[in-house]
Image 1 (tube, rainbow, N blue to C red):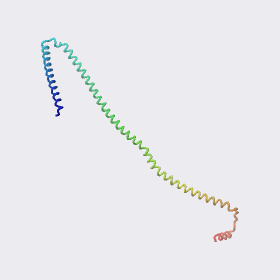
Image 2: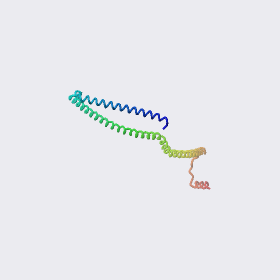
Image 3: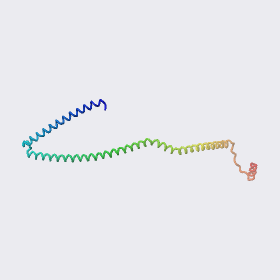
Image 4: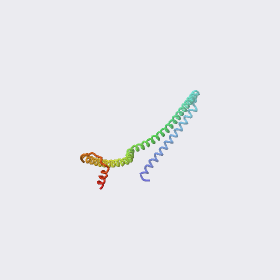
Length: 186
């Protein structure tokens, strides 16, 4: 203990002793008053309540007890209602929590949907792009062949139209045709 605690203890101890003295004085006063009241009541019968007043007080007491029972029943009913409502509130809070969690999950899915759709679209478009590229190559190849055939046809048509005058075909005897065939083959 420090020296500053010592004066505090002394002050507290004096206060405690003063309070004890006051308490003893009050106890004595209460005892004197109760003795005086007992003496007055014992000697004075007019101070005692009359019988009708007692009956009236008893009926009032019974009425108050009945009112108290009615109020207790109401309190029990309301307590039961409060308990029911509390359980409903608890269930609703749980439902709200579950729905909040589900909403968050759905919001996350909705946010991811464009990426998922892009990826799926890319996966589906890859074979289509390959097919388009193949068809374009085939188309270029066919166009090149068509141009080549068109060019050859044009040359052939031009050569055929510029080769001169069409001479009539005369029928030759079969022996001449054989000679002409052999000359051409030789």
